[in-house]
Length: 217
Image (cartoon, rainbow, N blue to C red):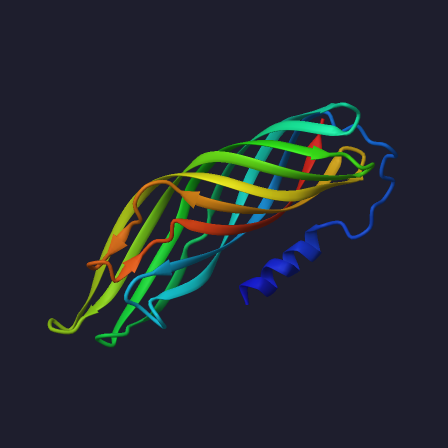
């Protein structure tokens, strides 16, 4: 269902036809934009089917940066992103004890700096990127206390430092307006956040798919 909603948003807000796009556009300059993020990650522990389960998370980011073109086609750039995410909840049973559980995760804040390089082909700019950043997560885990016949809730905030590597394409669609689609692999440094004696571990890796629009000034 989330995938359908995300795809519908892309279709609704992303331009379908390139109208009055510039011929041989200038890719050098400062830009500012907004994009939607769609994360796929796997959490682990003694839960569910085989102790691992995959889920998805939605978010939004503002981004801005500067590009410079050298040697006619080669683009070098630097970029900063600031983002947040919706609260995502997942549930199931701890397989050994048939105890119900619920995991909540919210990306409260994320700040990332990136470098980019790419090759400009008229209105198309395929690129690769690498970056480092910081994110603050709000995590909560609920489970059934069978002995006391009550629901127990554990919550914490986790501060993570991560690196990312990815690829994507920018497409000039109207004067300074540019459409972007990209993929990023993300990995946190440090230990995983664990709940209930390691029954559940927050993931240290994620695969992010994003689409957005930005304007080059």
